Length: 465
Image: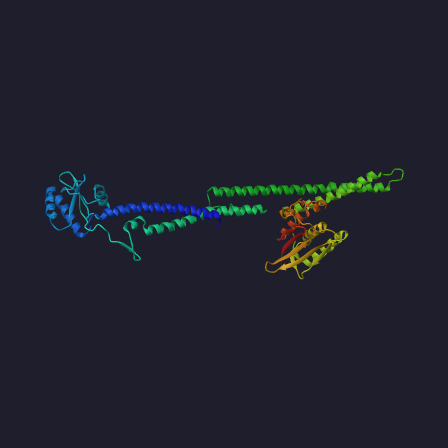
């Protein structure tokens, strides 16, 4: 569970626990007061018999007959009967037991056994309450596990209601916290997926049963991601179309340059073409070739990003593919005395599109050769991680490396490191971006690590067969 869950849980739990304690305390105080009042009234069978006999006498013979009866009982060794009217006056003008008054008698007569307290309308116009004073006003002690519990604590903090209240509070706090934190957690996962490039992430289906602001937030997220996906797709399509359209005029430009150079070669001595024009034509041709290469790279990148490339994977021997790429890289590095050394691992079979995968590895090796100092070696190795069922390809050069803050950025289009070595090497920053798209299209992953003045290490992981 996340931190938000526990915040919700503790807040709701303490709120409900406080409510349970306050309500239990209030009920306990009322019950304690009522119990003390109840203990002042004798509810035993003999006392009830006296009350019933006195009530019958009052109803049938009137107040004077009752007074005569009470005078007789007053001198007997028996519990004393009290008769109190609505004004609080006792029939024999005696003081009432401490704690007994008309308010308590009215309350007790409504909830106690009606034979313990009788309320009678007398012939003198007054209403009387008849009851017998209790002899033993102290209740027996409550004993739990051999421990005596004071009576007031038993009522002020009743154990069973408190236990039940705490359990219910715990249950409902957990349910409420889960109810509120679950969609937020799902939204967080969806945001992380969108941030990592997965614009197919949606939360609307998960929140279908909700009708609240969190569900509205989920719907807004789905609309936002869908709109962003459309914008990126339209941008990718635009780049693809522009790149494709640029190739035709570039091709015509190169043809025109070739024709001009051909005509210059056939020019007679009477009409020679100046050296300045020849130099300009060579420069135009060089730049047009570079632009054509750049447009080709952009076209490849846009196809990969938009998913337009048709992948037809087949089983291939990775050793053969790497050996061929290493030979090409050694040919390029020969001019600068950079040697590419390959440590092979036998019997590495993977499912891949050979041309695209070879292009991805060629881009990595070409970069390593470009940025390696003269008379150094680029080390290439391929191993199998049987536990993870992955093929791991490592390419390590001896260049200046890349800053830690740039290790992720070098796989973005048009990004080039700020090092002096990068500034001295021609390039457009598209090679590793294309490689990343190709590797991810093969369900693999690519990463970079670097140590200062120790070179750059590119690691490629691909699923093994």
